[in-house]
Length: 297
Image (cartoon, rainbow, N blue to C red; front, side, top):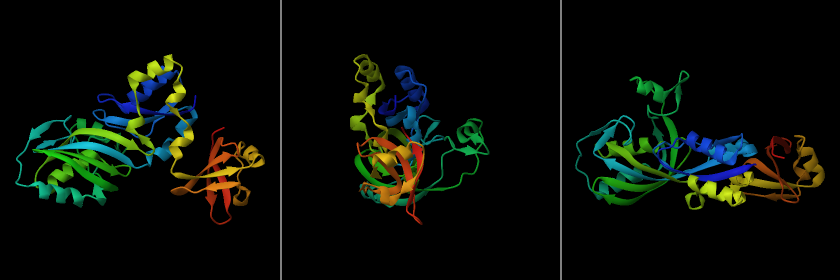
C-alpha cells in the first residue's frame, strides 16, 4: 500500500501516536508524518504510507496555515496553556493597537525557538533540557509570515488565521505579539488548517479510518504519492525513456514528450505517457540532463 492519508489529528495525541495508530489499522510496516504538530494541537497531519514516505521531505518544506487563539495577560514556560501558566498584568491598548501590531508581523521575521521544542542542542532535545530546569541560548531563525488576519477580538482573546513558512512556531508568534503590545501572551488554541495541498476540509478522523477499512473503501482516503508534489512541474516521457528511469538512469531534456510547468521547478515529477508516476528528478542546468533522484515504481 502506497499513498498519503490526510489525517485530522485530534488534540491530546502526539504526531507519532497518530502514525502508530494508522500503521496498526492499515497493517503496514512503513509510515511517517510530514512535520510535527504539538500534542495539544489539532488539525491536518498528512501520513505517508509505504513508498510515499520518500516524499515527506518535500511536504515538510510546504507552507502551513493555522487558526490560533492568543490569550493576553498570561505567561507560560511553554508559551501555551499546557505549561506552567501565570497571570500577568495587562497594559493599556485598543483595537487599533492590536491590528497595528499584527500587521507588523507580516513578512520575514526572526524567532527564537522555545525551550519546549524538539530541536536539539549538542544532541539533546531542548524540551528534555527544559524539563531538567536548564535554559540554553538558541539561535534566532528566519521565518516568513505570508499572511495573518484577525478574526475576532473577545476581551483579551484574539482569534486569528496565519499562513507561514516551515519552522514557524505559532506559540512563539503569540508570545512575541503579546510582548509587542507591552505585556505577555500565550497560545490558548491551535488548529492546523492546511499544509501544502492538504486541506482540513478533506481530512479524515482517526475514528473513521476503521469504518472506511471495513467497507473496503481505502482508496477514498488514500491520496496518490504524487499528490503531495502538486506544486512541482511535471514532465511526461515515452516508453523507452520510462524503461531507463525504472533502473535509475537519467535522460536529456530533449527526450521529454510533454512539459507541464507549475509553481516550482526545484524538482521535476516524472510520468510516462499513460500518466503513471515514475520518479522525481532534477535538471542539470549546464547540460540539460535530468538526473533521477528517487524512483517510485
